[in-house]
Image (cartoon, rainbow, N blue to C red; front, side, top):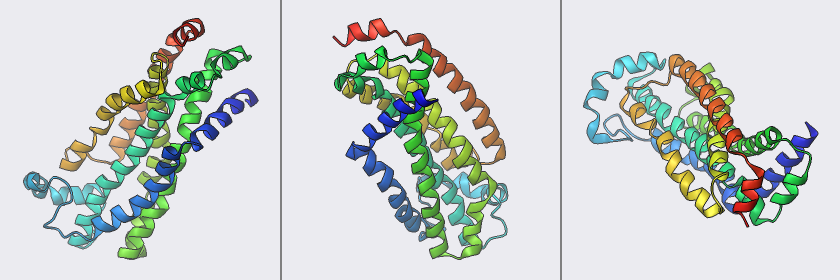
Length: 268
């Protein structure tokens, strides 16, 4: 475990030296507060997302209130909190999918650019230990960032409404989102990023390819906006199972792609 901590600590410190990582880690939670405040000020006749395509959405709105446990709120509050489910889910998905992908995609290329790759390979670390430590290091900061968002959005709802409405955000599905779904999908995207890092030569190329790959992950927001995909306990269970399977597949793929000799030759 101490060997893993050595790599994890180094990678996290390297990430914190990057102002873009710091900006995301600090800026997104603060930005989420103002985004939610702005959303909470909208009226029922002004949907925040795709306003011209909401006819079917309105037909099913009472059913959606029931699914999301909002049917006991006043109509305006229920409508606002219904949109909150989508907007906040998008914010958390952005942190848990994009940041780990980018951090892990550049993890091995950064080692080469810092002339530390040969040193890393010379240390008594197995392939499994290197991959595990790189993935964990790419997940820690995004996980903390998602947790930092949580009190900010609760504060935003509390300031706009009252404690009873803010209490809605303390439901078990939100805890499952932050403590289980976020880590699982951060591990998934981090494993995918590692696969990219194993095949490219520069961090710039890694970031470009990562950008192409994480776009499909964000596509889940579209059916959520239309109400065809519901953020409920069935969705949470499916997400946990699917995410766990994807993580195992991508980790095994990364393990298969990891070849020290080829990597050293590629970077020369």
